[in-house]
Each structure stands twice: as structure tokens, then as C-alpha cells.
Amino acid sequence: MDFNPNHKSSILIDQVPLNKARLSSSLNPYSPPSIIFSSSLFLTIPRRKAMSGKLDHVHANSWHDAMKASSPQKIFDDDINFDAACDEADAEYRSWLFKFPSALSSFEQIKNYAKGKRVALFLDYDGTLSPIVDNPDHAFMSSEMRSAVKKAAKYFPTAIISGRSRDKVHEFVGLKELYYAGSHGMDIVGPVGDSESVINHSGFIRSTNEQGKEVNLFQPPSEFLPVIDEICRSLVENTKDIIGSNVENNKFCVSVHYRLVNEKDWDVIAQRVLGVLENYPHLQLTYGRKVLEIRPIIDWNKGKAVEFLLESLGLNDSDDVLPIYVGDDRTDEDAFKVLRERNKGYGILVSSIPKETNAHYSLRDPSEVRNYKFFFFYLLDHYNSTYINSFFFFPFFLLLNQVMEFLRSLARWKKSEVAAH
Ligand SMILES: O=P(O)(O)OC[C@H]1O[C@H](O[C@H]2O[C@H](CO)[C@@H](O)[C@H](O)[C@H]2O)[C@H](O)[C@@H](O)[C@@H]1O
Image (cartoon, rainbow, N blue to C red; front, side, top):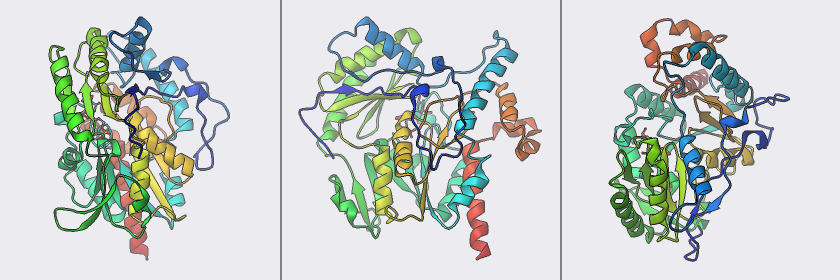
């Protein structure tokens, strides 16, 4: 882990434009010859250094655009022509599905590849297991989802890798049998596996958990804790007059939420955060879904967390291991990238709109689209699948969740495999 006190604080904004993305193909489910995407849907912003004091005009605009694009918007307004909007958005989504097929429609293919392999499951929390909601403290997962995760964890080692603090995400999920990585993977408790190579990671500590069991613990240097607490207080103080802003302490990182902030104040909140960050040369700014995230400048992310957990589980060096990572946010891209580069395992992006990604498959996320018209999208998406039969009864739709269905399918498949032996 790289903790360099001479680093200056920096901002990472590095979305890859759709038309420039390069994807390796060996595990790639389909490689359609040429699909044209509308580039206006996607945002490209170069990496920038944090600027001192005020933001210049271009910089402020970039932040405004980035903040606007950071989370899917409600697709329909009542005064928009529904049919036209539906056709256009659906055509784009369908084109995108050629490149990133639905993990549910492709389940047979995934299953065939997984045969005889040890599957390890990695799940993001917000927007993947729980719906995106206005108040971060209310992002509860449903009992149906909890039971789907529990079923999957019965057959596969399962870890939650979240931007939340480890304690908080554990509290939300509430399952003892899982492994948890909080603060974007910077705070992990993993099992002590066969592999000894984890001890080569700096930041690694062998410790004992509350039950007195030996565990592998990975955390950034503890020097960061008081700094994070301090910047958290400062961010609260500096944003308290911005209506709707919300600062969340995630132990090794801080989230500044602007989901409920009026769009006209987004530049103001970005400026305030950048202003505070100037005094913290060891911290950097990234962003997620309507959230600005401040974290230590260390060479660690969700991708490294996946590798660390695979090693801890003694699953890192075998060819018969298939890691599957399901996530919805840009921080999950680090994990998708690791799986793609290792050419082992599948990344599954949860999204209701086309996005550039390093994932292999996709699952549709209805959580931010609260309009009933989304129902038609869902039917269209599944028009040719056997699923459609189950969705005739409208209230059923409200319970739908493709991630849950995918986890259930995995567990059902393994259960039948175990029973057959
Ligand atoms: O890695 P994750 O588990 O996906 O955590 C990423 C951030 O998730 C939370 O924020 C997001 O979900 C909130 C609740 O639905 C929503 O209000 C917010 O707009 C989203 O950005 C969490 O509150 C953040 O601290 C995490 O960094």
C-alpha cells in the first residue's frame, strides 16, 4: 500500500468514453461486430488536480456535468411524449445489451462456464442489494433479498464490498456468514485461508475477531482515522447551509451527498468540498451516484479488495475458481477490471441505462425509476424470455429485482448440482 505524505490531494474523474473503451474478449460473452452508441449519453472528463480557492468556469462546468451524470435520472416526465422516449431509450438499451447481455438471459452460459469451478461471490451494497433512496440511512435491503443472499452464501463464499463503513454495511445486511469489506474495500475482515501470500500485502494484520477466531484484517494506516474524522467535521460545518446536503462518515472515507440538493447549488457544494480538501494533501476526491467521496490516497480499491479476499480464501491461484462480482457504481469498475484483466471471472453491472463498463454482463436496476411506465420497459426487456409469464399480475412487478433473481438462480443451480452427486 502506498502512503506517500508528499502526495497532493487530487480529484479522480476518469470515466472511459463508450466509443473508446477497449475490452478483452476471451471471457466476453458476445462481441457484436459494430454497435453505434450515442456518445452524448456518456461523460468524459480528464483527470484533474484539485484547484485552489475558487473553481474556474470550465472546472465548475465539468463538476456540474459530472455531478448531473453521476446517477440515472427518472426517465419520464409526464409532459414528455412517452412513446417516443420509450422507443429511443429502449433501442439504446437493447443495443447495449448486445455488448453486455443480461446475466439472467445468459444464465445457461454462465452456468456452463461455472461447472466444476468454485464460484466466489462479491456483492456491492447500495444500488445492488438495496434500492437507491434519498436518505442513505434508509437504504434497507428487503427480506427477500437477504434471503436470496443467504441462500447463495450457503453454496459460495460470499463477500460484501461497499463504500459504507464495514460496521454499517454489516448492520444493513445482517448476515454473519458473509465477509465484509467497508470503505470501498479499504477495511476488510477475511478468513485465514490456506494461502500465506496475503502477508505480503502491507496493511495486512492477522487479528482475532469478537468470537476469538483468527482473521485476516486489512486496513489503511490508522493515522488516517483522526484525519477522516477531522475532515468530516469540517465538511459538515462547511456545507451546513446547503439545503439537502448530507455528510456521512464511512470510517476510512467520507461521503458528501447532494441527491437532495437543488441543482443550482451543485457547483457551490463541489466548491466547498474542494476548498476543504485543499488542506488535506493525503486525501483525494472521487464521485459516485449523487455523492462526492473523499478517501485516502492509497493504492487500494474494490479490485484490490477482491484479490485480497481471494487470497485469504485460498482461491487466488487456482484455475478452477470463478469469481463473480455484482455492482452498480463507478467504484465497482475497479473490481470488474481486475476480473477482466485476470481473464478469470465475471463482472455484472447493475444499471437501468447503457453505461461504459468493464463488466461482462448486466442486470437491470429498476430502483431509481419509480414511474409505473417502467413496467413496459421491463416487459420489453423480457419479451422473448420465459419470464414474461410471471409478470402479468401488476403488483408483482413491484417486488421484481433482477439481482435477487440472479442470486436465487445461482443457489438453485448449485443445490441441484450438489443433490445430483
Ligand atoms: O459501494 P456501495 O455500497 O454502493 O456504496 C456507495 C455509496 O452508497 C451510498 O450512497 C448511495 O446510496 C444512497 C442510498 O440509496 C443514496 O442516497 C446516495 O445518493 C448514493 O450515492 C452511501 O450512502 C455512500 O456512503 C456510499 O459511498
